[in-house]
Amino acid sequence: MSAALLVLPNFALIVVGVVLARAFDYGRDLWGGLERLVYFVLFPALLFRSLATARLDLGAAGVLVACAIAFTAAAFALSVLAGPVLRLDRKLLAAGSQCGYRFNTYIGLAVAGSLYGTQGVALAALVLGSLIPLANLVAVAMLARHGERGFLEELTRHPLVLACLAGFAWNAAGWTIPSFAGQTLALLGQASLPMGLLCVGAAMRLERGGSRGEIAAHAWWLAVKLVAAPAIAFFLARHWALGAMESRVLVLCAALPTATNAYILAVRMTGDGRAVATQVTVGTVISMATLPFWLSL
Image (cartoon, rainbow, N blue to C red; front, side, top):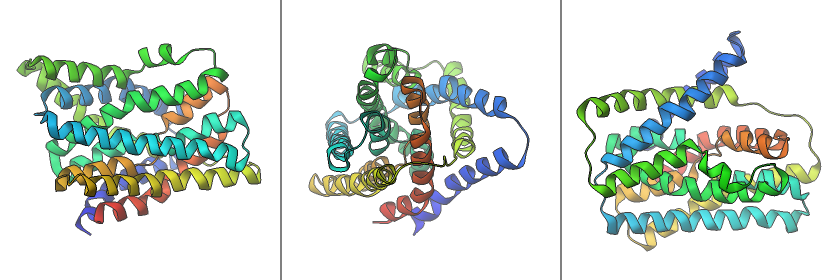
């Protein structure tokens, strides 16, 4: 119950974002600019500083990251399985299947910070930072055949991937961040989480339409993302006897709803993100109940 209560303020910010976007005529330009600021500046600053300054136990970190890769691989396999089982259109499968294994990093780091402070943020950044390149690689590879750019070009332009790789490299080199630069990055990082959550809320919307098969696909991918993936992570944490904080962060990362940039990627590479927009919105709403449940176990 205490974990659930700590999660609620983060979802409250998402609701505030929904209200602000619909009750006030700020215009799409404001939200679009804020999203770009968070995506290209604030959030990379948080990821880089968290990973560059984290005290990493390579042995424990290796097991944790391996578990994270395992549940992501399982979620990917289950998501793609929807294609032959439900006989989905290949374009819908390529765009929608990413909703079963991609995750909202904003929510993950915000909740980890609420649960464990800066140590929780660093641990979640380690896990999510390891998964960001993998999840993007798989998603872009699935979508590449429908877009103009290949997955290598997409990855080399991804600010979160670059920030994570730079943070890992800085930490591995044993360098320290100068005081002035560290404080500046800390201020940027502190702004990223509340702004990111507001943007999550502002971007939420439902798109009408869709066939019966598409509705079945939505249900399939929601079950994979919000039930199967965290259940696998919970089993792995128990099997490998991870510590309390490591176990909870692992399950948290598995139980996160799909990120809104899944919609952006689908639009950029296929020209149609309607189904993904609905999936992201419904998944985020449902996760307000499922995420506290998984964290309370």
